[in-house]
Length: 424
Image (cartoon, rainbow, N blue to C red; front, side, top):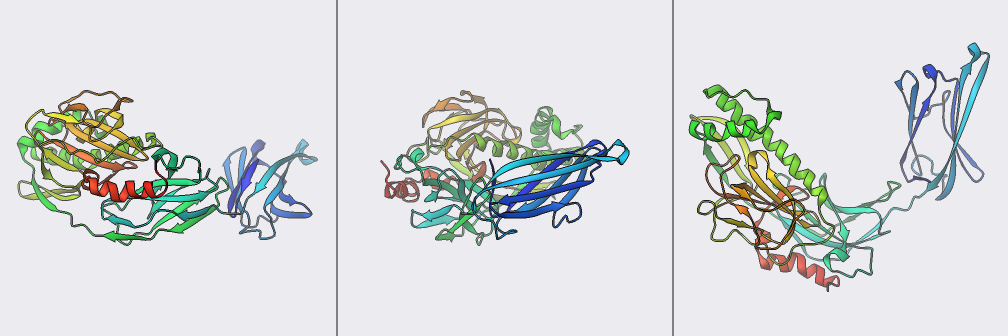
């Protein structure tokens, strides 16, 4: 059965030789009610388009909003179409009927967890209920959607399917006043919403000036271009090409690589795989912080601006890089500006990224434990020297790692909420 909600789209395609139609009528029947939806003589608010020589498409809204007299329950749609035949001496008629189920009750949402505090560029967790439980739900932060997952995947009351858990973020480039709310949408596209009592804390992001030299460009850019045919750059070592090639890699390839990382989030596990606080690379020093606003100069002239969305952790060359926490390998291969790169999934949309590796020692699909070696540090990709670029990601979008390294934050922002909701 087809579902119709408060406001749904009726989408009908009719194929006929030459697109010739003498009659098209659509009627919705429910009990004694017969509701005309469309005719060629009275198209109402429908959109009619000729998709090809033989195909006509008709679209219009249908549901409680456009037809308040409709009631929840079963209904039947009748579509009648006629075309001329025998040089117009008679018509050929076709009638198609479809059963519809009208659902007008939106999903119901309620917040279970308390004390939601979120720092700019950081993450937060919410526990909530949604009824019915089989709808799409989660948190919207502006136009960014963070799905909810069954609380059973976080060891919380697996007997209650209405209980859900969602991690969400206020990204570094979103306004502090960006709306944050719970949402749910059923298969009839009925939507439910609920506000989240929360407090946002500003965070100061650093700014830096990067001088790009001929030696750096000549060392890293040709190697990246050889493995990035999508950029279609003809390399040669003169100033004009050096600048344009660096810009293509630093901006265009960065965006292409970000889309790959974003797509990896679709493979996240519906349960939490990580345990305790995430571990920073041992004995490492922070060279560059999250959301560093970088301005690039070449021979005194500004040539680009980008935001560095991770931490650069400096150690001695080719040191062992360990998994920051338990997770499953989503990516273990070369990835443009990141060079040799590993992405681990920690479940419920949370991932960690390790870049510029000199070598990789894990395979996609492998489950690794916290502290297990996944590779060695290096300077592959767009790296000025041997270091580890480390990022935390939520649904494929970079967030600050600082919180995830902090056991007190983990306890208060995550574990407390799960325990209050009935964690095991």
